[in-house]
Length: 286
Ligand code: FAD
Image 1 (cartoon, rainbow, N blue to C red):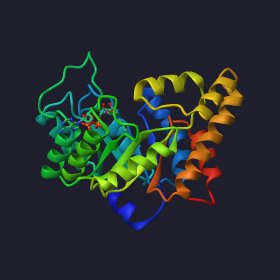
Image 2: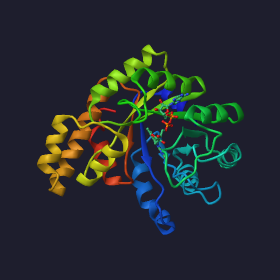
Image 3: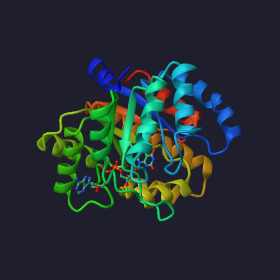
Image 4: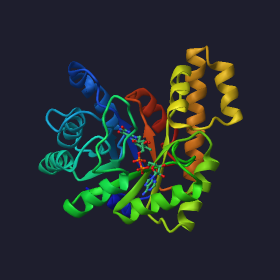
């Protein structure tokens, strides 16, 4: 099913993000994770993509196939374009099409000095347009409530996002954030800027101190003072940080749902216990 149709049919769409395990033997063990995640009844599961691979033996595609054909949950395949030319992107697209994958999160990808960039796709909107013109996928795009780290200004960020939607992105999935007010202001700005597709907030429950600093450095999400206090107070106590991080994520999600957002996209970090705890906490809300 095309995820844009899921958003049309129901409120509070619940989705998970997972990543393909790096080692081949871990891919075999992913079943234990998928069994629990799929029991939680997500509307779809998105699978991240590491640039630099090819369409042969691609772990993202293998995992998406597993989710679709063995677990009967809708997968969304992330696909980055900065390091690929048209022919390589077409190879990916044809494999996805042949496997019956209907949904693609079209991304530019992060710049990586170890991976040469190719000139065919400069921005995600170029990939969205190419896929939309030549294939029949439902295309999602990424968005950034606190602006993309390379963004020139808030206004140019919204204008560029509008180009991505005009090129054919039917759903937007957000970068993680820890202060819901950023997300609400961002959605208001998008609506003023003429972006009218569903915008799903991405939430990552933080359960260890090293993870949070890595994430913040990588994506530029700011830490609100009340969250900083939690890290400062409980950062050295694994169990306490687990409890506090889960409660913080749950309170963010409950506030978002109370504010009628289009859905919740949970960055599970392949941790089914975390996903289960979050789902238990919103069982009567979502
Ligand atoms: P774009 O939409 O192209 O935007 C990148 C920058 O270029 C922005 O500052 C934008 O304002 C600017 N821009 C866009 N269009 C124009 C234009 N026409 N003219 C001038 N400037 C423009 N990375 C991975 O490698 N694998 C993944 O699986 C992955 N999954 C992700 C999932 C989500 C939900 C999110 C939010 C991010 C994910 N990323 C992933 C990270 C993403 O690849 C990076 O954030 C990347 O730097 C930008 O990708 P984009 O698709 O948002 O790029």
